[in-house]
Image (cartoon, rainbow, N blue to C red; front, side):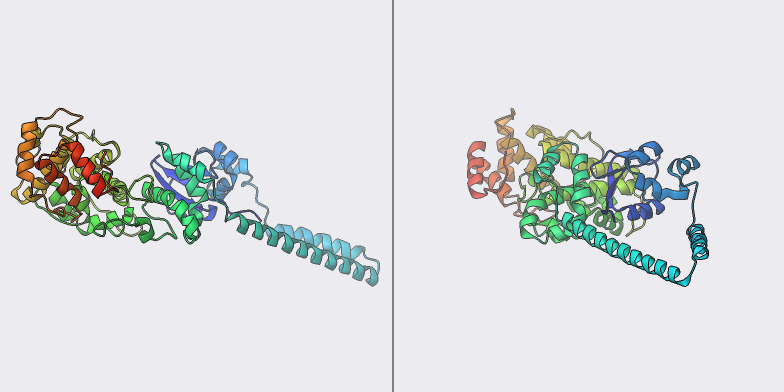
Length: 452
């Protein structure tokens, strides 16, 4: 009796399916969830393209056998599938041998003695088989409580390419995630890595609730941020989303709130119990990017039908999400500008001179003025705090700060996220405090904020 094995499938070098047992592998292949051009890996083994028969037979023969008669003839000859011995033929041979033995018996007594010996042999074999089965089952149950070294996972998690981390987690940890999070001790250790696995893949893990993955995120943040959630929400409000992206009206729903979110606001607020991403909202942006890329390609999922997204709209949404992630991770965006409201917001987030901010807001619809007034305030605050590192026009900056003082509300226009620290920083700067003095005051008042 062998231990259950799990495998990951990598589609188009960017999406991971699994972990899955061999039986589920066959079912998902039959449903065309992946094809012969995709790759498979198991037990931290090498990635192998499914249509490379020699490598698959060498590293994962159990998967090659799953294809059976569906394999090309050359595969069946190499794996022995071309020759099949039926159970019926085997039984005929056994019956023939038994008849010959019976004919060779000289008397009834010899016949009975031979039957008794056969009976004892069968009982002994059955007992030994049962004992071995029990032993193997106990071994498997004990092995299920073993996890890979946390140090190994931590090292893999720090690498720029997450493939090794996803491979280790997918094969050794994720199959037991539901059981693992029930232990407070194990949960505290593994939750940051479970969150990283979730938001680098589908935003969900079987056996781990969305509430646990979400953690202590702001109440106004989405209650769920899986890829399927974002696909469903786009379908429900696709007309509103397209209207907003085209800059025609200020719509408010999960997608528009996310696209309008200030990445510097997210960057200042890392959460405890997170590694990569550093917060729930950063994870939401990551899964939204995956969802839009899937919608733009026309892929269908199990919970909803494909939604047509105009190519120009999908490009603008993907560009905005990429820009947000770059600011959160690097402090600056290198995203090339695209047309529409989203590029204007990103424009404000990338300027280093106060006098250039007006270039980002020329010709905007009056309905969008509340949003852009707020974003100008965010931009001025960012430039002011960086004034020690970059050369700015002090007079222009002072004039802008005086105009903005008192205009920034305690909650942002789109998502109602708390702007208390940002409002205080603007007021301190407007009253004449230097950026260093402002940062010192805010660090004392809000020790959890990351200001540098």
